[in-house]
Length: 418
Image 1: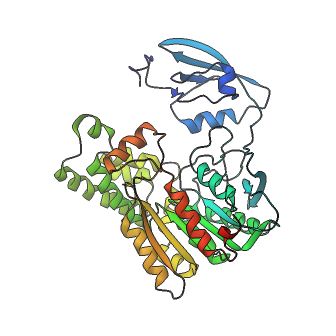
Image 2: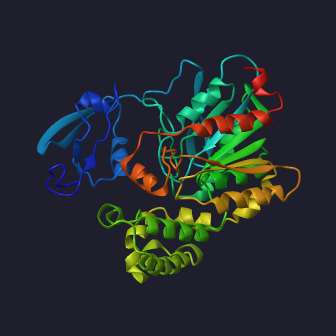
Image 3: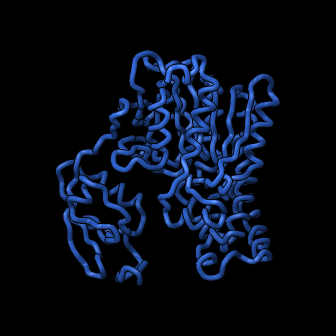
C-alpha cells in the first residue's frame, strides 16, 4: 500500500467507500484516501482502533483528520453526526434492546405488513466483529432480511457489544457471553405480540451455527438453518482448514500473487507444525504468545488471537455434537460449493446426529456458485481472490432455499397467505 498510494510509511487506514450523507462524505473524504491521523492519534491500519477513537467523541464535535490523497498530505474536519437508522418502505423496522449481564445490546426487528402473528427468524452471525445494521447500503445479509420480511417472515438481529451502539463486554472476548446474549435475544423475540412463538427459526452463520443448537436447548424452536459452520472440535476444524488454505496459498497472499499455490511437501511440513501449535493453543489452553514463543513460524496466524484468545479457548471446550443431540428440532445444513473455509463432512455430520435422535428431520444441501461470503464464484481459487478484493457480486440463491424450507414447516403455511 505504501508505494501504491505514495505514503511516507506503511501506516494508515485506506478509505474504500464513502456513503451518501455520512460524516465521511461531509468531511470531504474520497475513496482511495488514506487516513494517517485521527485527531492526535496515528492510524495503524486497524479499523477497530479508528472506531474506538470515534466513539469517544460526541454528536456535534468536529474531529481533525490527516490524510494522503494522490501522494499529497491534506487536512480535513470530520463532523460527528447522529447515527442514521435503517429503514425500508416495504415493512416496519423496529429498534429495541436486550440485556445480558453487563451487556446492553441493540436489537433490530423487521415486521411484515399486515395484522396478526408472524413466524420469525433470528439471525446469528459468525465470530467477526462487524455491525449487522444497514442504514446505507443494503448488503451482506440484508437481501435475506428484505426478501423474507416481504414474504411474511419477521426477522431479528442483535448487535454484539462494541458494534453499532451496543455496549458491554467487547465483541470477541467471551464465547459464553455471546451464547447468553443470543439466548436473551431469542427469549425477547418470543415475547413480542406480533411474533408466532410456535414458529420461530434460527439462522446460524459460521460460529453462529454452533450457538444455534445451544440456545435452542433452553428455548425450543421450530427449526435451525446453518450455513458455513462446523460440527467437529475446533482443533479438528482449524487443522483441516489450515491445510486447505495453505494448499490454496490464502494464508500468505504472497503465494497466490507471486508463486501460486504452496508446494505439497511444504504444505505437509507446515501442517505438522500447525498441528502441534493448535494442540498447545486449543487443547492445552496456552496463550498465543506462549505458542508463538515455541513455534515462531506460526506467528502471522496466531497473532490474530492475541486479544481474543479466551473466546476460542471457551469455544474449543464445547462438545458440539452433544449440542445438536439435545437441540431436538428440524435442521437444514447449507454450505456453498465454493466455500474453502468449511467442509461437507461437518454439515453432513450435523444431519446424521439430528436424524439419529428420532422423528426430527435434518437435510444437507449444497448452494452452487457460492462461497463463505455469498460471493458468486465457482471454485475455491476464485473465492480466494473474491474475498481478498471484497467482491460485490453476490449469489443470493440461498434466500429462496431458506424461505421454501421455513414455509414447509410453518403451521399455517405462508404460501396460503401470499
